Structures are given as C-alpha cells and as structure tokens.
Image 1 (cartoon, rainbow, N blue to C red):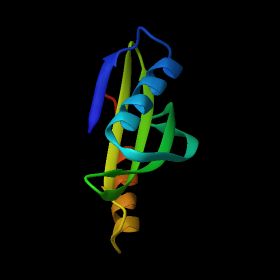
Image 2: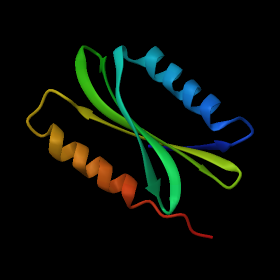
Image 3: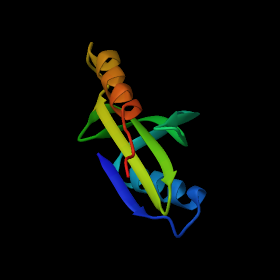
Image 4: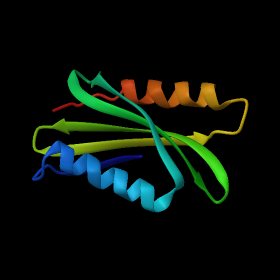
Length: 103
C-alpha cells in the first residue's frame, strides 16, 4: 500500500504519526530496526516491525519518502508465522526498491 500526502509537516512528524497509527491498529507493536535507504534515487527511511492483528503475528515494513512537495509512505505486511515469511518479505523489499518516480 502506498500513501501520499502534502508534506506541510516535517518528515519526523509524518513518521511519528504513522507509527502512532500502527500502534493503534496492532497489538504488541514492536519496532525492529531502521535503515536509511535510497528509493528511486531519493533518500528514504525504512522501518521493520512486528505486531499482532486478529491474534496473528505479522511482519511488516514501512518506508518514508519525502519527494518534491509530497510525503510518501509505503507499507507492506505478511503473516510472520509461516515458513514463507522470508520469501514474502523479499518480495515486499523488491517491490519497494522497484518504485520509480516519473515526471
């Protein structure tokens, strides 16, 4: 899922608001790591997390990309309690890295 909004607020404020929403939605929300990456040539922040929804454990990633006058949030999740979680996380990562901004 990709979200877009005007970037009238700072990147930190937008990131904090997104994390608050995740904490409201997910039980036992726990951030795992944060990396600085590049998406479509633009510096971005990638955060991995775990949490529960409907009594199932989920593995997720959220990427924050400030671009021009917009702030993009890319969000991907997969069920964490399967043998395929690593493959599914790799598919999400490849999808994020393939994003391209065009004019």
